[in-house]
Length: 178
Ligand SMILES: CC(C)(COP(=O)(O)OP(=O)(O)OC[C@H]1O[C@@H](n2cnc3c(N)ncnc32)[C@H](O)[C@@H]1OP(=O)(O)O)[C@@H](O)C(=O)NCCC(=O)NCCS
Image 1 (cartoon, rainbow, N blue to C red):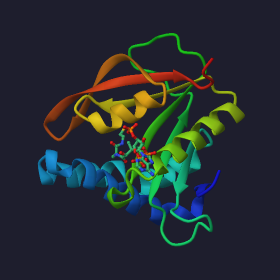
Image 2 (tube, rainbow, N blue to C red; image 1 turned 30 degrees about the horizontal axis):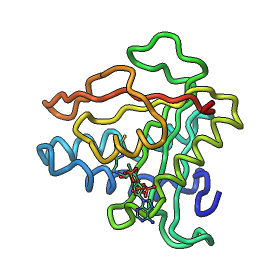
Image 3 (cartoon, rainbow, N blue to C red; image 1 turned 45 degrees about the vertical axis):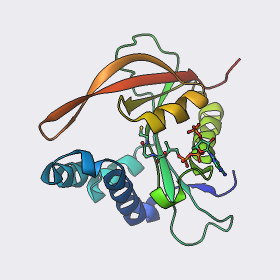
């Protein structure tokens, strides 16, 4: 797919930086700054990214704003195969879209769509049948985006950052829509 490549071991620093920055740009203003710092250090640490890259079922895609894939990536998706869906017990061959983030200056240019298409292609090629994710119930922009991509809400689950616990929607869609 144009402008997208799968991340590899040499991308640890890029992924650490991109994941921290995009999470912070999107959500930092909604939480206590010290709690956000701690969350970023724990969730997007070099060790955590290394661990994710070392597991075969955990895949990152990087998006670029040019077809030669030069300069810094401007978005990423993280897929985790065979991760169980909260709430729903019987889900056929699930793969989780654990993260999908695009730099703020690059929003609404089609990069999120390219990333999700790359995830769907990967899911087809690797025999997964259901793509699922969690999205904050207040995150209306992302919810509109996922609705357009054919996801449906099947339940809710908590998301904890610092002392705050918020509600997430659990969304899923068949990898191949009939
Ligand atoms: C959700 C997210 C990944 C979407 O990424 P994006 O790159 O803006 O996605 P796209 O550009 O492909 O599509 C976004 C919208 O722009 C529109 N769009 C796409 N290309 C466009 C263009 N060239 N001109 C105008 N509009 C365009 C699409 O129709 C789409 O509209 P919709 O959301 O109402 O359906 C992005 O908003 C994001 O990173 N949000 C912050 C992180 C986040 O909340 N992630 C989800 C957490 S689970």
